[in-house]
Image (cartoon, rainbow, N blue to C red; front, side, top):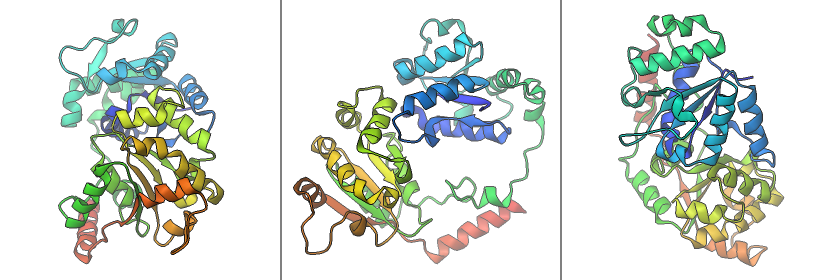
Length: 340
């Protein structure tokens, strides 16, 4: 059972990731759909987690207000008297849809732009969550007045997206070249590089304004489940999912594509055709030397399926920029100075 279930629309993903990190920093167990499996029970899993959570934080924005999934999740919180509402993105003025317009909404846009524990909207949101979760130190605001915790080694040198040691490599020529390819549309980009070379973060930087849909290879069990997961996220039918992705300019990213069952890789690639015909971009992320092996294409030989062969002809291999010695030294220097 999670302390907090976050309901949001994908256009607001950046704000939600920031909010999630802050809540987890207060030792709250936060659930949002980044950890979902791409299976047939996608919507059932969301429903189960929302009903079990101690609180539901609905993150309002113009996009969220139009999402039937956000409205359904917010209704679970409203009916269960465990709803906390916040505004993360909107022009002025913004009114939540009925019946949620009778629930006070904390406007945390200023806090998102410049996080500060003195921000009154942020403090009010934390107090509301603390009350729902039975956390008196949060309900009173005392936890926000405590000195920030000293970061641990595992926090500073994190395996996931770096918070303390992030280095912006967007000015590098290699980054800009890959950016041009990824934004051109109508292609499969086979992005490869050693583990921890920044492949996933590179994609996040390039597509940050377009809210890409990213799933992990180990989550994908069938073509139907893959597109079902995407359809659920977009609030459309499975049939319309490829076209909806293209209309919204969403890239489709499969991280660790080498973890997709080898027999399933060809059918997954084949299923991208309608999306690519609409100028959509697909990114298949893998470690080195597995791209062609796992696509079952050998140099000089035809692909086993003509459609797959056609799509592969529209694909490009790209290697993630390598870390330089100076960048690695800079990461170490930032990290160790943070730990002092």
